[in-house]
Every structure is written in structure tokens, then in C-alpha cells.
Length: 108
Image (cartoon, rainbow, N blue to C red):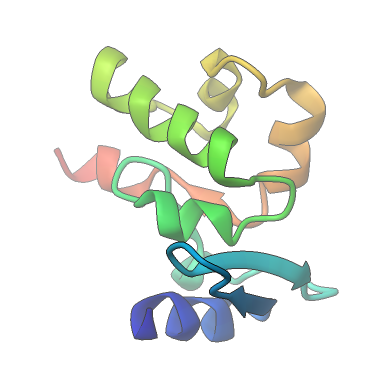
């Protein structure tokens, strides 16, 4: 959980943690007015579900779909290729562009 909070802080987002009767749940409550610098952008090819949930418009189901797609079809070749994930279209991709990268792909 500490890693999730540290990532949220570095991305400039607020989170609400709730425990209820089950595992802790993380919800993004506010995004920064400015996009994350490229050095802090989340790499779509290495991000965990917990990291992806911190992105604006990405909840647990979409985060899991991104990871499952990456595991099934291989790494993303560009931010635009994120639209291959069911439930993610051009509008979502455009909204995420400043927060994500595929930097690890260029190092393979």
C-alpha cells in the first residue's frame, strides 16, 4: 500500500483508501491540473493493476483489462495502441496520453 501512496503522490493525484469488510480499495479522487512529466509517466508495459488504477478514468476493471491484454497480446508499441483493449477508445487514450508511456518497449 505504501508503494501505491508514493506513486499517487508522485503523479499528483489524491486517493481515498477504504477497507470495509474486504481488501483495501484505492480510488482516485482528484487529478493534477498539469500532466505528469515524462519521467513520472506510468509505463504501460510494466505497470501493475495498482499503478494503472491511479490513472484518470481507469478503475479496477479497466486496469485489469490492460494488464490481461498485455499478457495475452504482448507489449504495447505506442500509447495509441492502448485502444486495442476492450473498453478503451480514442477519447480515453487521449485523456491518458500525458500520464502514460511505453518507454520500456524502446529498451527491449
